[in-house]
Length: 368
Image 1 (cartoon, rainbow, N blue to C red):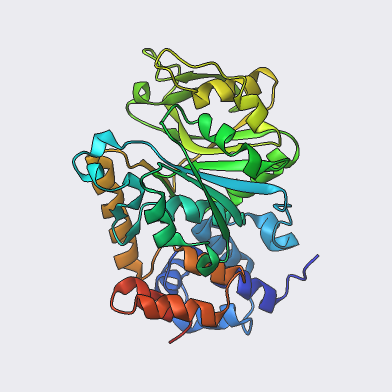
Image 2 (cartoon, one colour):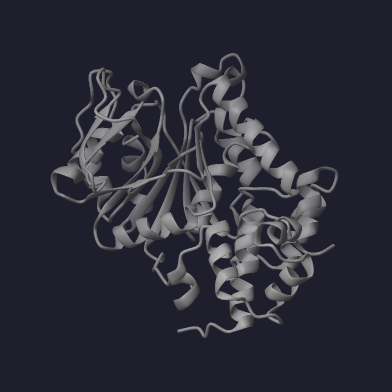
């Protein structure tokens, strides 16, 4: 167990502030101390009172167990990631007639950076990207083998968009005996407690339990929906029901235990000829091996498959980043924080992008 001394606590609070994209001045105002006090707390040269610690926990949405007992040592060595970046993107025509939806910019970075950052926050480094045949070369040109992000990327093709569960069959050889986290390439997740929720899902799959994420929406009939009891246990899952049993949409992030590819092969095509992910989730539910995580206040989720949601996501990201002079969902920063890339590797990425705010932020991370 780590000691709860000032140096250890200061490092936790510094990382939490950066993950929440707060400046030291903003935190000082919230806590009710001077900026110099925040600097000394983060350096470990000033002790934190119980009242101040309470404010930090609330402000950063920290788990007190993480502070007392150190970072979670959840094993991610047997978990691989899949990003499904196929599909025709017809809702975004005419833009996507010439370019993959997942390569379109959402404010200052390609859309695929956002789901990639989710898997990286879960400390998953072995990732398969599934694309259309015609778009794969563009993804490889953008992301390469993933080494600039400290991850290992491989690629596969989805010839036709025949359902989300199909991705798990396409990825069967890649997954082998590993558990899987799959995220849709057009989904954006943001929230200060997201890393903690990812840890819980990893703990679940290590215990042979699948996890789906729910988000409250105003138009549940447009989504796959989860029905919950008072303890948030999953009672049922339905795909775009005419009369939804709840307003919690099932988002495009799923964690499945080892063997998911074989289970996906059990899914029969729906009336629209697709292997529905809801049907796969229902198989786990029938075996009492499905849990739900609800993303409540403090979280944002976007399915950026329409012009309105694309604009909404861009505006949110722009507001957060401009207000806090930071970049959120930044793969290079995540890799650097986890020690997957060193300063020289980060500097190479910064130099390539030194004419825009994204590159300047990478230099800022290094204190340059």
